[in-house]
Length: 208
Ligand SMILES: [Ca+2]
Ligand SMILES: [Ca+2]
Ligand SMILES: [Ca+2]
Image 1 (cartoon, rainbow, N blue to C red):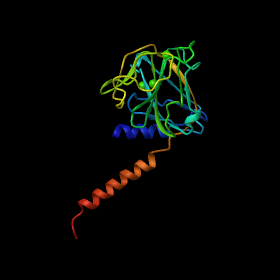
Image 2 (spheres, rainbow, N blue to C red):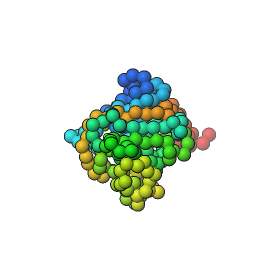
Image 3 (cartoon, rainbow, N blue to C red):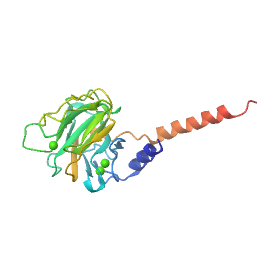
Image 4 (cartoon, rainbow, N blue to C red):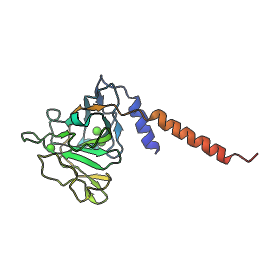
C-alpha cells in the first residue's frame, strides 16, 4: 500500500516533458500501473524497456475519454517487436495486439473496438514474447499475431497476476488518441486516509 501511494504521488508530481506527451517516470512497474498525467489531450507515452535492468513490461493507467476514437500504437514508435495489452481498472483483459493488423509491422496497434465505455484503463507494453497471466494461465493466447483480440487464453476471465517471458527491448513511443489524463487520485486518497485516522481517533478515545 505504501509502495502504491508513493508511486502514485511521484508520478503525479513528475513534470511532463511537454504538453500532451507523458514520459515514463523512472521505470513503470508491470503490475502496479503508473498514472499518465499531464496536459490534455494525452497524445503519447514515451518510455523504455531494458533487458539489462530486467525491465520487460511497463504498465500505465490512462483515461479513455472517447472509446470510438481510442487508439494506441507503437507503429513507427519502436524498433523492437512490441506487444500492447489493454486491461480494465480491475486488471481484467480488454484487448491485445502483437503485430499491427494488416501486416507489414512487428509493432502494435489497439483500437476502441473492445472498450465498453469511457473510464480508467491499464495499458501495458512488452516485447514479444513477454505475456500476462491471471491465476488460471495466459490471459491471451500467443497467436494469431496480426489481429486485435479480446482475452482468449485459459486465464481470460481473471485479473492480471504475473508476467512471463523475455524479448528484445528498447525505447518506445505509444501514440494515443481518445485519451486524457487520469484524474488525480492524490487529494481523494489523502482525504480518505484522513477520514480513516479521524475515525480511529474517535473510536479509541475514552468515553466521557
Ligand atoms: Ca520501463
Ligand atoms: Ca517496467
Ligand atoms: Ca509484435
